[in-house]
Length: 226
Image (cartoon, rainbow, N blue to C red; front, side, top):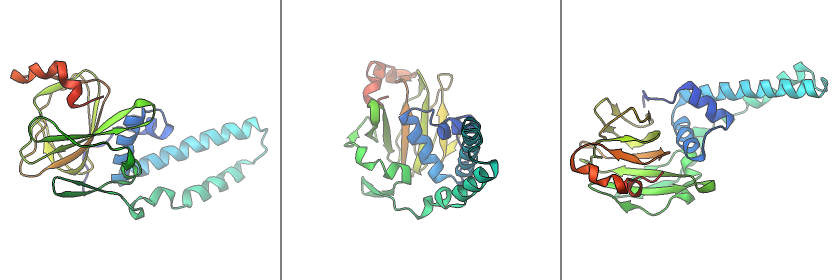
């Protein structure tokens, strides 16, 4: 599997440092599960954060632990299989429309938070994934031949392809691809012969921009709730 669309390094740093919202954390974390390159980057960032924090602790403790001891402890931590364990952990299975999907680790660990599926307009289905503190993200299923009307965003939209393929005016996105859009971007996601399951989070409702679909704007939060 070749993943061509990734979170930027700044977003991965925020993820590793625990500075993202719960909804964005699960979307980025699920991408990290699926992407070896980003997983290595996150491990490197986490190691650097640990080293920086340990240096601070050592200084505060008046060198109660020597730098050599700190290095040995870090080496033991990062030589463990924690950062490389993802592929061997079991994943939950999601069934929808006669299809069977394997959920990546981060999403599988939160599968009990997935609500009921509801049909949207056209060939679209949505299931909410409710997180702590009222944060919510959504699983979006696009059947073959589905299309989301042209829209932009009042905030940011992060979409991760879990299985399948969709395209818009700019590109085609497959398993593991992470797409981050802001209010300056307008697009029309659609599927062709193949269906697509995505994980998406919004920090503000969609804004439909074309034709009769603009009549949906007062109700856009009902389709893809932030």
